[in-house]
Length: 386
Ligand SMILES: *Cc1c(COP(=O)(O)O)cnc(C)c1O
Image (cartoon, rainbow, N blue to C red):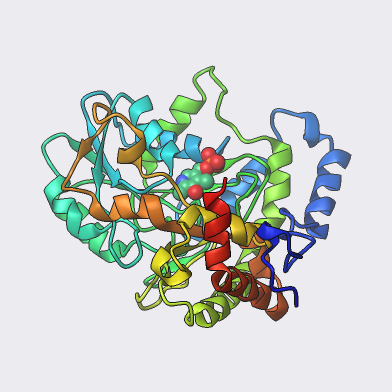
């Protein structure tokens, strides 16, 4: 094996690069052929969106599913369904998808940012009580990077204050959290069918809810002669077979995720986003890690990610924290957000397609990381000269 890291001119561990996404899927091809044959590919209305809505509602065990243009749009619709508006506050984690923050602003409400848990950098329910005040209208929680938010705790606090919860399962469709499907704990759940997501139509999303009033408000808003929100028939036709195959794909990703996590234990301070919750099978849109440069010869997080990427592994830096990238006039912060600040600087995420591979694919990830680790000082030196 070539021990010179690819970023310094050596041969990459995976010269072909990470697996493409989406991967070819015969069931999707067939569904799209059918949508072409029946003419619905070019119609406003047809059976595919309605069938997908039923499929999503059934698999979440809730009455309503509203497909729409994106996960970001789904969050906006869920906020509208809960009647969030100007003057209201919505609580979310300071380390979260930035579209969620934007959605709160879109409705004229104020994001209230709470810190994340030190173990897995997902929203820390213990921070919620201090954030709740007279203007609080909703709590928005996201399960991120293979870490999950402990929903029983969130719901207990939310119910005690009579507050609705939006559960963003865009990164974890079909995951189970304490025995229950992700997205079904709160008052509305969010799915995304964006181009990088586990189930994709290039674009798309959905809201799932058991609340008739929420579903009704969303339907009114999206059918007011302003048809800016619907998913297309063709998108729905592509999503349906992927949804059927999701449970099996999730199991494969979970098995490979567990294998990878066990093999990475030898790298001290590359700590996976953890879940010690019973009855939980997280989803892996991204497999997240807390990175500490001390274990890698002082190589910065960004330089480490670049070096591993050069080996053909899809390892990226995580989100920017919301309080770091937005003016403090835009939000209210609760506490000092120490862990979210750490997450901003230290998250690494592995993109999911490789987790559908085999043991060899997993071994290559470990090999790439090891290669970068042993050449840490050379990588540091090369970065200094730039
Ligand atoms: C991807 C994602 C969304 C929504 O994404 P769209 O690209 O708008 O479909 C929402 N929340 C989280 C946590 C995400 O990762």
